Length: 301
Ligand SMILES: Cc1cc2nc3c(=O)[nH]c(=O)nc-3n(C[C@H](O)[C@H](O)[C@H](O)COP(=O)(O)OP(=O)(O)OC[C@H]3O[C@@H](n4cnc5c(N)ncnc54)[C@H](O)[C@@H]3O)c2cc1C
Image (tube, rainbow, N blue to C red):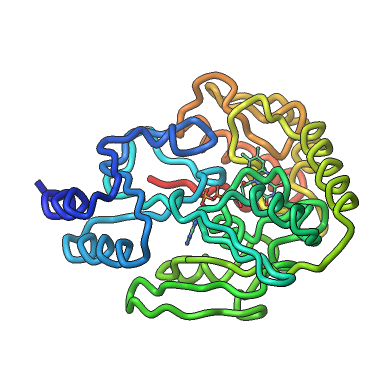
């Protein structure tokens, strides 16, 4: 069996793993068949060892944070999912907060608040991990990760070098980062540069953002957030709404009535339902407005 050596290693090191784990349980869309193995390493050395096994056995793998921007095929993933969930420590150093990749971004916001640090309130309620936030250049309310990410510690899994990248080296632009172009970069941790501020003001801003989120987003259905990136000079949700696509349904996948930018899993949607709905929206928007929407959701087959 191709995983024998890897499993023997995981047993020996007492690293938690799950065989044939349904990926629908790893992602917020609640869609996806079984992955061969999901591994939950706790140390960088373990990631290096695991990657060494996988590369030498030519087994494909993917890093996954909270799975709130990702969807796997119904056929599953014939490879290894390396979950960052157990890399989740958060520490404060003066005006900075240092977050490991598996920490929830909302937990970082809470830590910042408890330490009277302002600047990350916009991200409160984004359901992702810090790794996903940094990778996606997540954004909300006119702020984005690029406004607060100062330094990221990276493991290059092709050389096992560990190094820092700072500020412009993240190559941030709208919903884009250097990590999308360098698939060998594993985000270990990130330093967010914040500023001292009034604690109750920070609290109120976080609560205000959370209630705007609850009012505008279809949080009662599984989804992966906005399905499309923001096109130049506009919003995908506005175009989709104006095109009359709200409520459009294919199988169990539906364009949300509440927020046209969201595709929701309204009734046991399959991976192909979501793909078909994405294609339909893209074709319709291209025909009507000449704009080619680009997917924000990451599809894994
Ligand atoms: C209800 C809802 C609301 C949302 N609201 C917003 C919003 O307001 N703004 C916004 O921008 N997004 C939003 N999203 C989308 C999503 O939450 C964000 O993009 C988030 O930052 C993704 O984090 P994640 O940990 O879930 O990423 P995942 O889906 O786990 O991963 C995304 C990508 O990052 C890579 N990755 C993750 N960790 C690492 C790592 N350590 N090293 C290297 N690569 C890594 C993965 O391989 C994958 O390619 C929303 C989603 C939902 C479901």
